Amino acid sequence: MKPVILLGIESSCDDTSAAILKNGAILSNCVANQDAHQLYGGVVPEVASRAHQVNIIPVVDMALKKAGVTKEELDGVAFTRGPGLMGSLVVGVSFAKAFAMALDIPLVEVNHMDAHILAHFIDEPKPQFPFLCLTVSGGHTQIVLVRDYMDMEVIGKTIDDAAGEAFDKTGKLLGLSYPAGPIIDKKAREGEVKFEFVEPRIEGLDFSFSGLKTAILYFLKRNIKEKPDFITENLNDICASVQARIVSILMNKLIKASKQTGINEIAIAGGVSANSALRAALQTEGAERGWNTYIPQFQYCTDNAAMIAMAGYFKYQKGIFSGQEVTPLARY
Ligand code: KG4
Ligand code: ZN
Image (cartoon, rainbow, N blue to C red):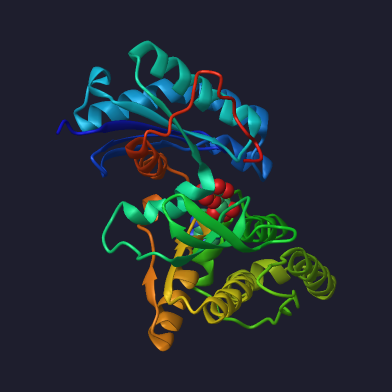
């Protein structure tokens, strides 16, 4: 049988990415990051959209070149239809449509959040169905019950901020650049958990992070009033303390979800799954509770097109394609 070669395109937020997949194996995964947003303390949609326009063709060219594949060899184009920023999605969706039309090959639309979860099928070991996936990114925080590649149920979600937002907003209060998650992670390794932030009491499997953000704001204000240099003198410890609380909020709900469903196959996905404390906590809890745990490689945690190509491959095999009338869905 002829191998299936797919191009994956991801442009939902501020990273432009292209990947080539051949029969379920990733041959290349190229990402162009946008540093401009650091200046603004968050993603500026208009800036992101323009940068995607500049980056998309070079990134696709690079992905093809690295994989040693010509565009004529492609069998389909998988792309992120949503959720994400409309101006960013439009660039990837329009590119994918034009490319597929020019090459006369099928288009496969992918839900970005499903793709974060399906990134677990890129490498070994692969989770067994059904499994639970804590999907934590800059825009989402969910516990998903995954019954099959295309059968997923969100059983818990944030009622306000996402976990990545909690990291990024804390970083803004501390004067760190965007995205602050990786910076807090690094500084926390040099610090100790010295400050206590209360855990919100939210029913069931849902999460809340807005109270934590307010608590951090008042904690900083109070301490700066007494000691103007409080942040600089205690930065690593503040980072370690905030990170520990975010991780414990996530882990406690994951433990609850495992108990409720009786599922011991536990995965994490999304940008925040790159966090070293969350990865360590999952391993420790997993060993204690007899879970089989699944943590993606760093390059497949944050936004990437490899996961889009992988998710697209499962749909491609079933012949689930989109027409040229497909448009982006900011709230997929
Ligand atoms: O999945 P992702 O790349 O983009 C979205 O779909 O949102 O996630 C980005 C989020 C940002 O909030 C970023 O601060 C966070 O992931 N992040 C981290 C780490 N690496 C990325 N948060 C904590 N620790 C990290 N090491
Ligand atoms: Zn993402």
